[in-house]
Image 1 (cartoon, rainbow, N blue to C red):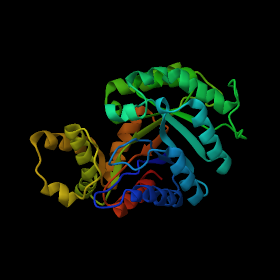
Image 2: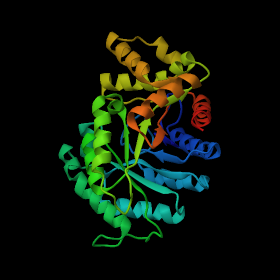
Image 3: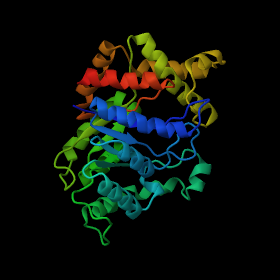
Image 4: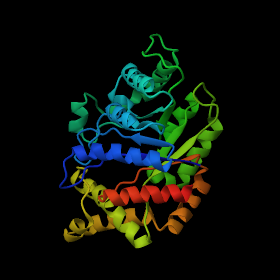
Length: 323
């Protein structure tokens, strides 16, 4: 099974936001050294806890500091962009780093109404996703009414970050999917994956269905340590549901020192209980169960934690574990 990383350029309390970006570049260099297959970055707008709003710009920096690892987006949010502009950006990246660039796209809009207004979009902007995705696909393969430049020597692989409906679209267009979140733990998720495989139509981009599962995976010497490393992300998610703002990662000691409402505690504990986090033995068992349930072709770990050294150590342990 292929093994990849998705880095969200998380910011950290007490540190300049630019370190979220330089940390992504450093992590990509380390991932290449460890032998990971891909390194993807994300797109988020006006989010205090995430530094990257432009995957194409960050990928240019990562490509310049690496030599062989595949680099890509997880993903470009297509409702925020014109398909031609996205095609031109990734064809340019492919021209600079031939044969190494992936384009993952999603249909999510801004996190809040204010962000959606700033992006000049409202909730119905995602309604054209299938048409925009098909146009982007044709632009990348040279089959559109206009020709995007620079013309690629080979197709840039296109992936769909998908939920149930997104998997239906990907199957019709013959595209690989990346799935994550609660759907991975539900029977409905397994059924949606099976339906995607059954209804997949081979295309120029992909002859066969391909499923990548994306989730946080934290590996440490023991289960308790891994759970502590996973706490800052779980805390940030719980706080975002309470305040409507996704915050920077905080150190574990600072989190423990704060007052916890019963609702926040319940959300944090639930997130930690369902996380893939633990010793190598624990994580291997959890991943084996997940792969058996989903039939995944690829694992993309989207792990974040406050301690950067511990994050790099987790990446190394996961690479050794999956082998």
